[in-house]
Amino acid sequence: QRPPSLPANFVTAVEALDREQALDLLAARQVRPNWLNETASMHNVRRLEALRVTCSDGGLGWASFDVGRFQLTRIVVQVLAGDPVAVSAATLGAVHQRYPRHDTNIENLAADDPMWPGFQQLGYFDAFRRLEMVRGSEAARLEA
Image (cartoon, rainbow, N blue to C red; front, side, top):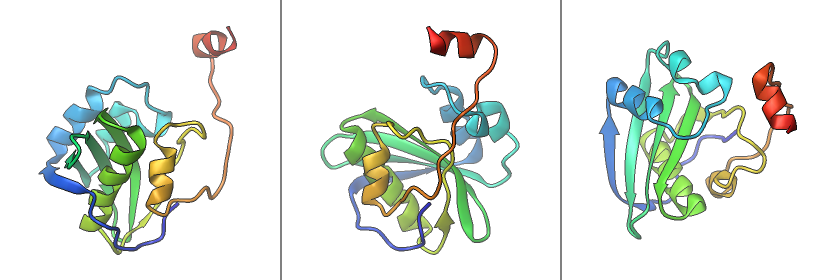
């Protein structure tokens, strides 16, 4: 969770992407998304936006998110080049520069995600934890 505030500027360039471009980015993810942010689910998000960020040190990343009236949800951050912490912080910084008055909630970010320290740099905190349930062949693969 993150309360509204205006972050420092970490980026060289920010490109706003439309809904279709956001869906294309989500479909091209290399990492298996959690059930809340699966690409099929994101097709149902009416106010889906995305930003692509180029950092001054050459880092590259993007974030997609659902823009509600008072809150940003369903945030997906991907680091394409550079340090995961620095690029995730820069990418989230761009999101919050655009929507400084929106509260933010992210769900199902793994505790050991290499981007989590970047989220923390932007004021995110762990509001609650839960165990992600898996079933079928995915559960057997995880137990192996």
